[in-house]
Length: 236
Image 1 (cartoon, rainbow, N blue to C red):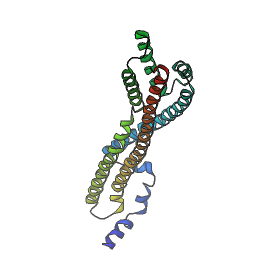
Image 2 (image 1 turned 180 degrees about the vertical axis):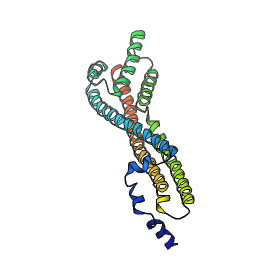
Image 3 (image 1 turned 90 degrees about the horizontal axis):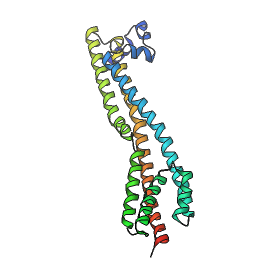
């Protein structure tokens, strides 16, 4: 067994082994199907990294804007004061939540002169929170898809490379590294490409999921604070 492995590693002609020393040589020498799989994995990876950088910026801005608006809101004695302060924090998701609830309060005051239905205000807060979270979650499903599918696509490329290696081995009629090397390299490249696409996507998806849960909790807590301010301002 050991002799067979040594023969496989060292029986190839040196000049044949030097022909494929670079990664590009290995890729360009691969089969059309294997290269198509690599192109697909590259597309998955590029799309994932684009989403990662975009979400990193958007969620970071959302957390910062929410925190600043909450501080301003807690300093406000009335809804009118909070509404005036919200103008400078408008990109923050909590500002949109506040504006929807404030609009519901204004409608009730205009219609009846008092805040008569606090349940409708609570529903407005919840609906606005769900809308903002849905907006922030856009495209995250692509990261989940990339994390779960890319390793299997890479595995398909690995199987194709192994099949090619055995085909070349059968054609050569001997355990020659020059015959099986390209197929083995093709298989390993596909495996690496699949993992390269999947690992960052999985890590980013988990990280962003945790951030979104924090934002959701923050919005829910803000809804309670908003209702408390309603009680102080319009309580009987």
